Length: 271
Image 1 (cartoon, rainbow, N blue to C red):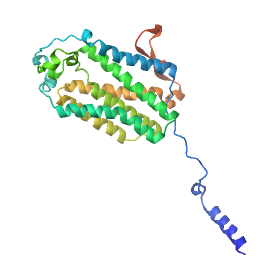
Image 2: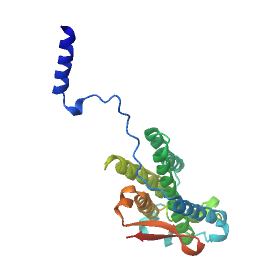
Image 3: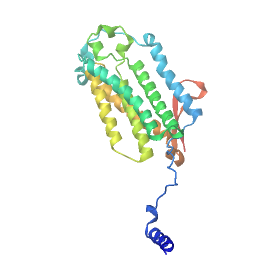
Image 4: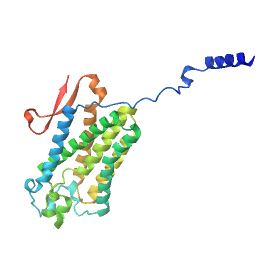
């Protein structure tokens, strides 16, 4: 008797249970979604060119940068002049530490979230290219502008006759933090949908570094404002150019090396 009742009861229970609520114990978890398209034939040369653009000015800084101070603070605009005399050592160290964490944390957290695999490798390639392109633009600006640091204007003897004393514009720390966290926020947007909190974190951490660099006497306010804008632009643009959704849509832009084997990058469109 019971042998017939139990199957009937189970059948009735299954019939009354919506399909969405049925257990799916045998269904494997979905694989991490790949959100970027990486083309090694393009991305490796772009990253290598950007790395060279960072390394060469550093190696030849003494030849490229004119050490022209002592300089008069009177030549600095009124908006920036108040930074002359700042020399907060704690702010200096805190900005260094924050910049390192901003570069290291996104790929490590991504690894914890995704696990090792193609999706994580593609995320890492785009993140690395973002930092390299951003760094190349920072180096180019520093070599071209050669603006003395606030500490150099204040007569810091360690900076007056060193190339590092003439690299104020624009802030590499601020730009790097905004680029790194902006790229991480954009990656999360592609994978999980738009969320506000990653952008709030990007703005808050980036702003804290900007304030610290000014307090440390390493940059003027205009340096960190330009650094924030440039870093965020790169942090969004490079991931956007690699996004699979954008690639599938057809039109788009891509960074490629200049033709003829020369140094530098150019943007090309796909229509």
